Image (cartoon, rainbow over all chains, first blue to last red; front, side, top):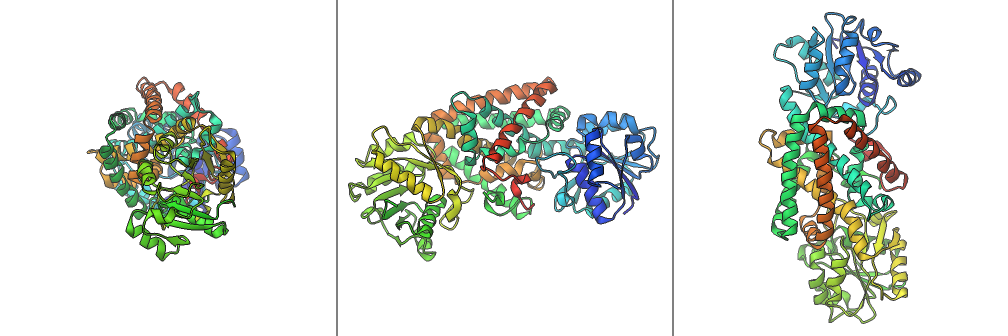
Length: 298
Length: 298
């Protein structure tokens, strides 16, 4: 492992999982910081990091690698807080769900080597207790280095992610943002919307929505329980790609609405038949459980 | 158990789960039939029912209770096939996901006591091998008796569903169709749409969609892998309620799209915060797993 001292800023689901994975693997020391004093206190109680500091400057001052695990809208201000204390050789990375905007925000403040990263992994939970060391096992971590990124730094960061169990992919930041708009941001947006729609109905009570949620609705409520601030920032930061995907989705939904209105059963069946194949591939490639109902006990 | 002989027409996920639950509980004999000869053959191989017949008439001729487990669009034609052979005292029920249209189709053909039912349970799988006896445990089964349904028949059918583990609720058929439009039909329609949208992109490859599906998309692919014919029929049969819910959803999605376009972070955060409560209630009421990620192993 090329990094002796790693600083993690932000000790939520991803930051705390990273710290656990690094420490359990014995790869390096971890200096942790979170802007929320309650989170720092809890992180210290559960010995989440080698050391928890009371300010971000202290966390990064001896770091070879700094990983920012804060909402994407907060990256620039965190960078501004640490820039004076950051060793010149340190590599700066992050785990945000949009990459071009994060790179721009960091580059605007930091003269250091910046290699943005995005581990495509998570749960609907948050906070320092929600993390676990195996979160990244078998998941993909996408690195979006700028054209002038030093090759050695990129190799070291790739090895770091592989050491904690992830598969690494290198991608252009703008392409990343387009891919994730469809595989992550649009699904979250739709899930938040339908849960809101169900909540607002007059003819159907909330109690009925809950009782009969096993018909499909409950699947959407899981991702609609994700962290609100984190997701607000993602939609604002990846605005163009999200709006583009949303426009396509709306067109497709309108076409389906029309097929129902005019009772075009063949069109419905044709669409419903071709969507099975993707599910099969996702399961085959180990990106989801094979067991029905995601292997739920219920 | 008031029913000595139960006939099950249609041996897919629900029909085969019913048969297993009845036989494992030792409640009655089960005569099974499926229009597909391969399904009948497989059902016989795995001893799914007490007896598998080669035509629906033979399956129902000694039945006290007949449960139609076929796509909702096929209910009327199955009823026409069995009406001549059905004992006069037999109760006819079903498991379809829309209730008013099914009742109308059955009443049009059968002079018998009809009490439609809908167990809100299932997985994305289908066929006689996909069923399991505990599918209905702790799930809700909604009965939608017509006003003139004999009370004893209703009580007997309620006891039947409770015996195989379900909670029973009595509801007006039209209200059922509205409730299920939001808790089941709209979620399926949206899931089918987004998987189709992702499939059609030029800028993002299918391989990328699959690799990075853990960001949220994979949750939608599960229900978009459900049986195409069954779902085609549901959307056509519950057209009015589905179109009404779809219209509300589209309005809410447009409002969210606008909030993103004009960067109204507060509006986004407010919606994302209120959707968590429903998830919490669903888990508290035992309608979903408490474990993060639905308890997935991945």
